[in-house]
Structures are given as C-alpha cells and as structure tokens.
Image (cartoon, rainbow, N blue to C red; front, side):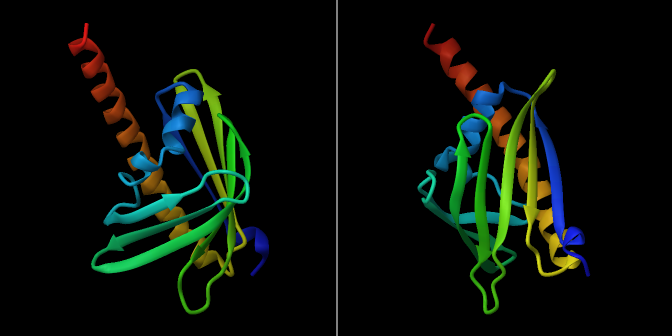
Length: 155
C-alpha cells in the first residue's frame, strides 16, 4: 500500500465569512458541540497556539474514544495544522491540515489528513471528518441565528 492512498481530503462549505468561520472552528466552547455522527463530546480541552495541545474524548455508541495532538502551525483566519493520535494500544500519529478558503457563498473548509498506516484507516477517518464538518456547519449556522435573535432583542 502506498502512502498516497493512506491520506484523506474532506471539504465543507460553511455560509459565513472566512474570519468568522475560523473563529468558530477555534472556539473551544463550540468544539464541545460538534463531532462525528453517532458520537457526543465528553470532554474537550485545547491550547490553540503553536506547540499547544488538545485532547478530546467522544462517546460513540457507549465506547469512549480519546484523541490528542499538538498544534504545529496556525495562520489566523486561514489555516491550522496539528498532529492527531488516538489513545490506543498501537497509536498512529497523523497530521491534519485545515484550510479556510473564501468562496462566493461562504467559506470552504478543506481538511487533509496524512500519515495513516493503511487506506482503510484513512477511509474510516474520512467518514468521521465528513460528518463532523457537516455538524460544524450546522452548529455554526445555529449559533449565528441565536446571535442575530439576541441582537434583535436588544435593539
């Protein structure tokens, strides 16, 4: 199996300005609200700076899965690069790059993850990231509706 087959790429369009979408993606309060389908976040902690760490535990069908990593590169409003590793017996450290790109109808999030031991592992993560980013877009939209309602109430 070649390394090229052991990578994934996922995109998600989010209707919002790039700067605001990035801020929401980096918001630890919101990170507790989105994850893959069939899971719920049990805990999330992050120190989003180069060299900072994150740790997220998710309950998926009764099983708790914990991921952790280190932020390698942060370009505010544009990109985040971090390592990703599950807490398990034989962990594989992968590298995740998330870019935020301006589009006419909002912001395109492009997530690339590399370093998997095999293609089947990449496929499983692709399914998880696809649903997680879809859920992020829904949380982002709901937060914006909530903020607009609050602004209208204070006028």
